[in-house]
Amino acid sequence: MKWLVLVLLVLGAALIFQMGLLAFGIYTLLSVALLSRFLVQASVRRVQVRRTCSHAVAEVGTTILVAIELVNDSPFPIPWLLLQDVLPFRAIAGPHPALAVRGSRIVMTLLWPRQRRRFHYQLHCRRRGYFQIGPLLLESGDLFGLFRKFRLADEPLFVMVYPEVVPLLSYDVASRRPIGEVVMTHRLYEDPTRIAGVRDYQAGDPLNRVHWKATARTGTLQSKVYEPSTVAGATLVIDFHAGSYRREDEPLRSERTITAAASIAHALNQMDQQVGLVSNGRDGADRIRVEGFRVPRITRHVARKLAEEDVREARLRPVVTTASRGPESFTRLWEQLARLELNQGLDFAQLLIEAGSRIPRDATALALLGDVTEMHVLALDEFQRRGYAVAAVVNEYDEERFQAAAGPLIAAGIPVYRVRDDASIADMCRQMVLA
Image: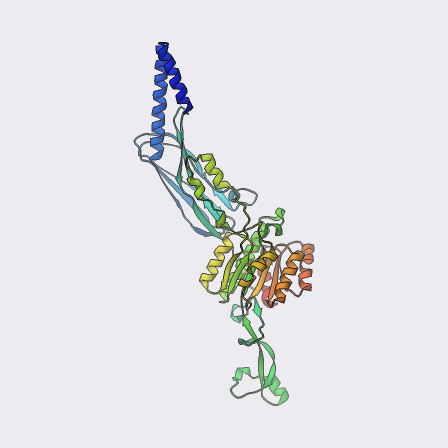
């Protein structure tokens, strides 16, 4: 309000020195300024805004329609109104943006009294993630540029895009032999597809258990002995530490890891087996800011900066989805994979220490790795020595790097499977089933 003090001082001087023309000019300027201020504040406050988003959850490839409706509910015209729907910079920037914007999310318009205007734009989902749409910002002013009024018109909306699921076509679901079989020392039930040997026929053995070739060879009835096993499913142990993925390969390699994890989880769910998740990544919901937009006297620049800010505080608590079975369990895990982001917190060894007690022993600990160092090998070997069934999926397209990564794991007795590129995910799963 320094300008008002200056105007009053000049007006006082004009009255003292009886400068009538100057005093009249000051009166006119002051009247125009006060009237403009009143009109701007009264008009912007009475702009009604309604924003809708066609999807709250979506899949990769979906196009989301964002529609905005403005109504000038005041009796005064608004000479100019700037409308901006803020999107997070990290989601729309870079050579591989997660969201592709079609249409304009920044609009300048004129609103007459009681006028209604509609705008829309589209978001094409190219990658999975948890995205903040908004806040919706309004700014207006008078024709002379003396006053501007900013308003937070609508709070953010949130859209979750599920990761892609690659159909695993190279195994027989009816075989009931999913990824992660663990041979047990106690007989939970017998697997008729895995014959351990033969024994003499006992009263009560069904005919389909008789080993006819052995019977013909020995001359006495022989029955098959099946290997005791349990179908245990798997716990996906995803190394999502930022240091495990080379910057020049991002975001493609880390997204490939999530796609592989979602595909494996979906296969296990289809076979009604338990599946869980443990990761040192960050839940995308943790970085969402809402409270910051409610700061008094916030400006459009500050609100936009808050919305676009990439909060990178390290998460030191593992992301865990308890292993269970059923469609609801898979949906929870799928949502968690959608929100999972690279993190600077726990390394892989620390992850197994922190979350190891939450991995069931009757489930394979299936590690999905972007890099393999001595720390990874030692951590998985120690986990294996504690009685867990361990396997590793290495996400590496370079042959020499894959050989260097797989060698120490194989030497430690850990089965290793490979994801070379997106097209190899189905083959990786076939190898795991047949291994």
